[in-house]
Image (tube, rainbow, N blue to C red; front, side):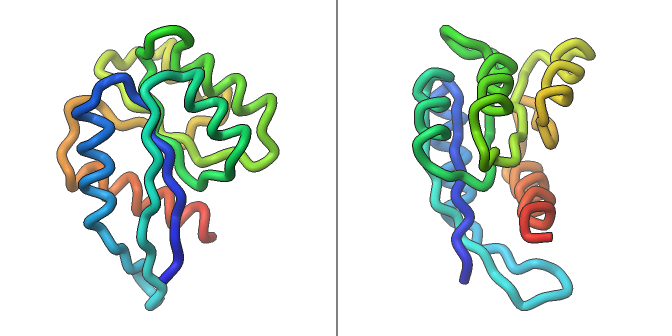
Length: 136
């Protein structure tokens, strides 16, 4: 079983813990293979904390809220795209989707979006798609 390292950067405790709870309980087996994955999850409340962690440690997937205290999620994404050699596949989380936010996020390498509120099955599906992308 392979481990996928996930970082969650969101100022809402319930979102951070919800993602941790769902993914900690999810052992995914990829279609067409017998390869299975478990998740190691790190949680951060601010963009500044998240950026520091991503610069110091390698993560495979990042769930990143756009509306954060201090720097925004798109600012975090810009820093990651400039400073990190091993960039995590980033899924933006937002309760306020807009064309401008999507455009800025995609320009800076966001892989996808997850709208708040989201259901556990939506989280699992976007995570499965991300795992398929990073495992090739």
